[in-house]
Length: 362
Ligand SMILES: [Zn+2]
Ligand SMILES: [Zn+2]
Image (cartoon, rainbow, N blue to C red; front, side, top):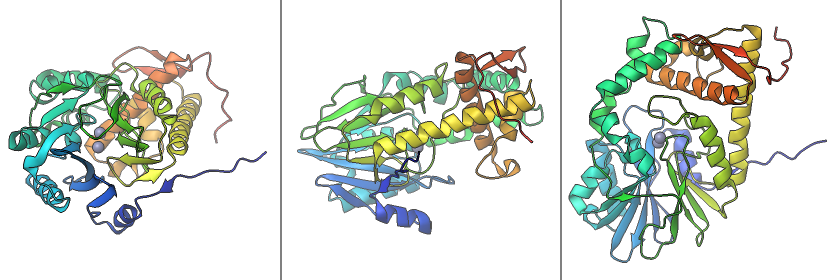
């Protein structure tokens, strides 16, 4: 038996070329009245967030906003000018989730334009703890990392790893809360909110049935798998949520996916299947590692997994994300009795009664 492997079709060809060349893609008109504006992210391999500009009768709406840096602000301003508008035309900022590359500039845009900001309540809830009263956050993170078996000399670095990015977000409470299925008020647009928890608890995509478009935020990207981590500001099983959220969008009538990073593409169902497959492989990899050496900690498992570059070269922030990802897989495996944990501080993992038999490893 053989199956024809299908692949996604990249529709943002200019964006993909720019990606390959290591340069910023241009501002592009994606559809009548719809533009993509790349906004740079400082010192980050993702390089830019794609802000989408939707023309309204009386101004424009933005999907996501960019980091709170002068460079990002300038890029957003000049991008809006290229679309024929300006910052004062912005009537709404629809934010897919609270990560700083999406939410960072929302408050400043509102200050300049009077726009309303929309966000899912599950992400809105986290704003205070994430960006204002952070002492508790660092403390909880340290406990989680200790339980994961992170060595003592590495721990402080990892626990503090995201504190320096706080300056790049202005604390802006949303004006509108996006419940699942809600249709934000945007004259001329039929967008509906699709709640897709996983990458963050309140992540949302926006779907236009009429234009057959999915604005996918970080939920679905064409090339990389979004980070799905267990941490103190996540639901119990973010990866379980994420896999459900992938299935939730898979059948939406969609001709083109407009992601927040990388480039546009067609083939939503194909990409969903690829992402599910990727996590399936990770589950197997973890089970094989536990069969070879039972009683490993999440940290020991993480260091031993395959990553896109050698472990020693990975920055603290990414290492912490990697541990969080391993934990996210372990939680799903635990739920299905493939794995159980023993002890605490650190927890050690063993194969459970439902674990798949693994081929012997060399
Ligand atoms: Zn994100
Ligand atoms: Zn992002």
